[in-house]
Image (cartoon, rainbow, N blue to C red; front, side):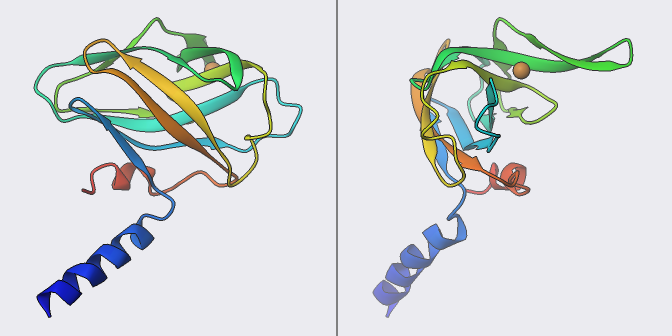
Length: 159
Ligand SMILES: [Cu+2]
């Protein structure tokens, strides 16, 4: 009976998180990498995720790259003279025990010089490699979707 329950629980669990996915490297957890589907002529694409540092030392996201684009940059949004603008940042600190959210109007990954648009439509996924100072490299699958995932931040803490 207990075995049956465990099997049942194992079968049900992935269904709850059908649209969320999570990656781990060292003490870091990267929750639900996603990208907004854009018109086919959009010059750049942005990628978002939440990084949680479960360790007790800070780490740093140094750079990112993807086979679908010639260049990938770390960007932040900021207010300057009442105008929202974005600019490149050299790296992003991931504080010990903290979360850093990459989201629209916040930190984001900017993919420039798109080489392959075949994976940029709703329901597809493309690879993105994150390079961390201490934890090393991890390749995640970025889910392309029409709708921004409302539950992304909530899911970041669900184990
Ligand atoms: Cu940008």
